Image 1 (cartoon, rainbow, N blue to C red):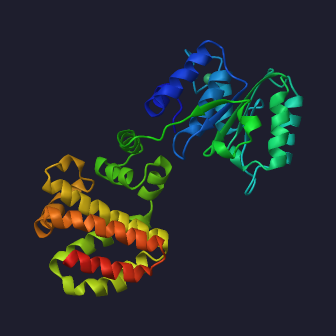
Image 2: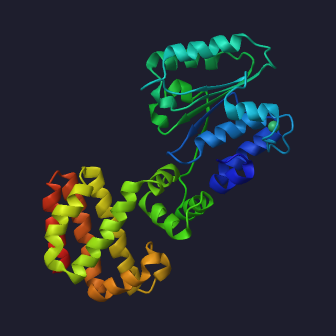
Image 3: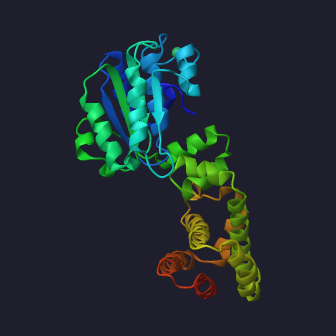
Length: 329
Ligand SMILES: [Zn+2]
């Protein structure tokens, strides 16, 4: 949860600065289109902006987060603040009509109104056209905040009415910091930041038992390749395949293997601070004795090949069998 501009600046410095400055100059647009990948903070940014607009105790744009206005925005009960999101697969015309109706009963609190359209690319054509009409009416003191992962899918006529704001994906360092703030250890934060650059996905994975087991199985495989190569095929059949059943899971297993062999390469070239599985340092050290720098590097390309084969629908078990044979060469 990000609910101050100070925190938001650590995630989206450029955009935060720009919005804070507009708030302070009382030059808030009638419509914004916030565009950015999942996990870039679109929702938090939109709520923060709404609070800055309504909070009567805001100081230099920073909302107090404790007054009635702030609290009702947080709980979704503010009469002048509306949140629209897909009802099922899409945002329907009726939802936009409903919003307009709500807004015609003005004077509930003030004339100031804010509405957010989350996943705006999911508006049906009818809904888009309805919203466009709404944006064209220069009525009231209204601010629309549209959120999307794909601004290309928004009607150009709507886009042209909005101030487009692009949110940058988090860089690796920011992501690790965020994950640590969310309670992950540094070692774990590094791993999840290596697996995805999406904050929410990283947090989900960190709580996912399947993923925790996936990590264990990968460690076991790496160890078995060194100590008990004759058992590897059996291990693939009995442990690996049942866990990495679906193709996306199989890809994930290979991604984890890739990180292991990258760590071995980092060990060899003495860039140990780059290691992802730093808490398995002794295991990586041991593995690096088994696989030379060249060998570990070759294995990286074998894993990339295996990932491509999976994409081309080669049978996952065959892919794994071939890959582990490469590892042993
Ligand atoms: Zn407040």
